[in-house]
Amino acid sequence: MHHRPHHVRPSTIASIALGLIAAVGLAPASVSAQRVAAWGDLGFSGIENLSAGALQVTGGVVHSVVVKADRGVACWGGNLNGQASVIPGLSEVVEVRAGWFHNAAINGDGRVLCWGSNSDGQCIPPQGFPPAVSIACGGYHTLAVLSDGTVRGWGNNDAGQLDVPKGLASAVRAAAGDYNSGVLLADGSVAIWGSNDHQQLNVPLELPSLRDLSIGAGNVVGLTTGGRIVQWGRSMAQWPGSPDPASLRNVTDIEANGEHAIAMMADGSVACWGLGSSGEVTPPAGLGPVVAIGAGFRHSMAILSTGEVVAWGDDFKLQTVVPGGVTLPVAAEASGRESWIIANADGTVATWARQTTLAPPAGLDDVVGVAAGQFHMAALRANGSVVGWGSGVAGVVPPNLPPALKITANNSVTMALLQDGTVVRWGSTALAPPSEMRGVIDIDVGETHALALYATGRVECWGAAAACGVPPNLTEVTAISAGSDHSMALKHDGSVICWGSNAGGQCTVPAGLSGAVQISAGAARSVALLSDGSIACWGSLPDTSGVCIGSLAVSDISSMSLRLRQIIAIGSPPKTCPGDLDGDGAASGRDLSILLSGWGTVAAQHPGDLTRDGRVDALDLAALLMLWGGCP
Image 1: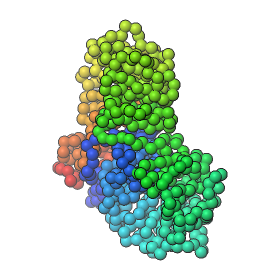
Image 2: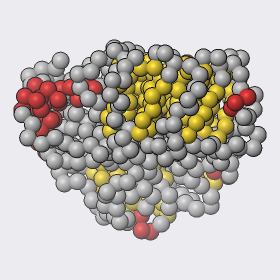
Image 3: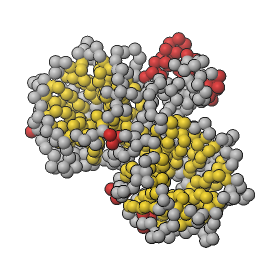
Image 4: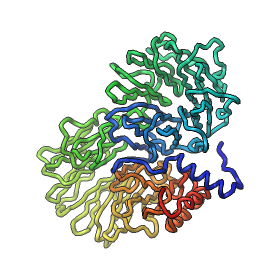
């Protein structure tokens, strides 16, 4: 386990702090003018322009990572540890690897950057070593081969996986399994250390010269210089229909993870073997030709010759649902229970979900608004018409629907605000709007109730009585949002009012909250976008979904929405000055106040955590003081 050193000299603290800032990528970087990301139970980031092609794929237990054609990084899937929230500072990435719940990448200058879970220090690289040339991630540790052929490891060492053999040199490639580390040496031999629970340290005496090495959950896979597969360690299951790896010829690449492995042949075909209970060893029919492969814990991935990314196997957190089709700038976004839809500024839409029925219909090229439920989606076109798709009646738009201004949806209902100020709903028979509604300027639908905002600033609620106790004399409202069983209203003065269920603290607005410009309610959580581009989040504490404590992959947010257990946001690039916490262009007294306000904060995202080690402490204070007065 990683332990923080005690009684460290201040000068050493400052040096360490600045080193950590560089290591986690908070230095200035060239990024696009807009970003779109999501975090919480499910998340994604960096997915823009993914359809333009990919260079490398890899995966963890519930997430996937891709190096894009522009050498940026895209992530998606489970995000409770921030592993699907790409950190700033990644540029010209040459390699990326995923552990169970963290990632490590090598930038073009050889720096190692890590993000995701840091439970055992696996995301804090040691300082002062030469540029890295190869990286690998185990369950809770990280391994790097350096340009001088030596090896460094950090993170969990319960099985000795960080105990690099003395005198080890001439390493060229890193490999890591759950509790193992290994390297391929320049002469084609290998060295493996760590756990030996499946005899994975017992390297075959007559092992041929290798050109690649990969380690899974106790299983070791090697690729010989002659294009053959060799294995030792855990005896992997021979899943029905999968090939005997010893019979494969002309193999050019291998990847092992969990209890399965994947190989690519010179003709662009692939073969998978091992445990296949989640479909990870059953590639899609007709796959190919393939130019690169990757493996998650229970899923497999491939890049086609067209640059398209394909994934198969476990989709528990949508890690095999590739989020392509997003181009910047983004105009609108929405999410369902396990689905996303984004309207690009050019009028096209991108969707991804577990259900294939949620693929958008052809011909959508003028979309200005979107909505999503569990099994259906809808798009608002520039002429006011609405298009719906998916399964169930909520995806069937009423014929001759008049032009609409806005659409919204829950799992079983779609609702439209028409241009004449009236409201129409379809799908489930629930939540029929009150009769004689006129002058409505905004609507929103939650799980059990719906809200309407009138031009007079009055709010009307219908549905579950528990969520519809609109406070008496509530006026001057400019925006509304309906959660699962609570409601929010934004007033003209930037204050926020909540009512309904408060079981998770979702209606306990933080004291002194002001300057709100947008609000969104989810499942026992509430979020407000503030005028400075930051967000305030409250409810369901401790928030095990990661919505309120997860890594904010977008800063200077211009639009956001909370849906159940995940949030999606559109915003500008992160600040390029790590010490400028208040955005005034310099590290000064106000930034010191912000840092001190989070002193001692553990396992929570706080702007004062400059070193991104999950704690606001002396390391962060030293870093701020070293940056005092300006930006690097």
